[in-house]
Image (tube, rainbow, N blue to C red; front, side):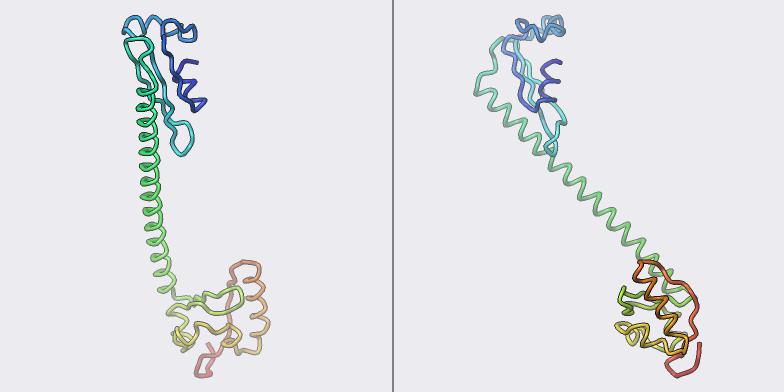
Length: 193
């Protein structure tokens, strides 16, 4: 419950012009006598607007902290708070950049796995538009990636059972689920795969 604790909790400067005469400081009177302290001020230093630290300044003589001295110390505390906010922001930006780079590395690895998969992989939007396909798709169907992208699965599913499969795929997409299965389809040249 000393000046530092009060400054930290309240977010307001706590100045004691007569440290030894203030009964609130009784627990620290012996130490103040030993070190020759006559007055003190405790200035809160917030970080991101929340209590973070306290700057304590002591003087040998009582009533040392006049308006001019307190003004300088308030400016110092504000500068320290600004510096902490700037360092925290820089740290957060660096962490976000590391996270972004890690996410990009994971995405590249996943893209490599999908591209090299022996299974056909088709990435579709919820409305059924083909967004991308892997190499296994182009090999199996004869459609180049550019020919498939932007078209719907229904345009490429020409098997008599394709309507049922198309509805299953559409239902899975609408539910945000992943559809897995096998489809008998025709290649670009008309043969089945």
